[in-house]
Length: 182
Ligand SMILES: Cc1cc2nc3c(=O)[nH]c(=O)nc-3n(C[C@H](O)[C@H](O)[C@H](O)COP(=O)(O)O)c2cc1C
Image (cartoon, rainbow, N blue to C red; front, side):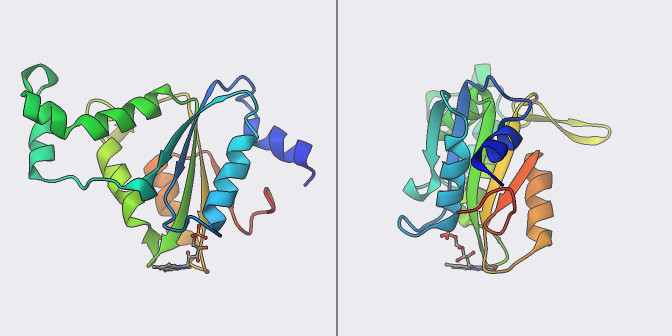
């Protein structure tokens, strides 16, 4: 597909995108297919402010202290609990600020990277990014587009459908996608 067509397809419905959150999670700094794909997608949103989150720089794992802080009402949190939630708060703020979220992830051992799963744990905040309802969890960050750029050695659709469900992504690109070619 010519470049103009790619750009139209990726930005369709979001022509005035102001902020793109660009996330990567490959442990490879050089030669990463998912990084190349996500960069190519991000560059299509010309003029947008790009927020960068490289999960290879390190992502904390949630633990008991984090759960305790998260389930404590915001007004009642101690300074220590606020500090425990600081990284999560920053990541959630990035999501809230973004019109478009571009996620680059490889498949490692039949799933997303450990860093990507850790990020999902950190941004899944009941009452902030989603809420429970009688029909199941309901996302609270509406009106955004998530585009996932995935690279794998061959693991197919089960991971793809899991990721799509977890992120409510509206677009999908992979290293073999006809939508994008490297
Ligand atoms: C530790 C590790 C585990 C992997 N596990 C899988 C896998 O389960 N299924 C698969 O299709 N590819 C697997 N691969 C291949 C990667 O998904 C593939 O090389 C991809 O291009 C890596 O992403 P990157 O190029 O952005 O670094 C694995 C690679 C590594 C390094």
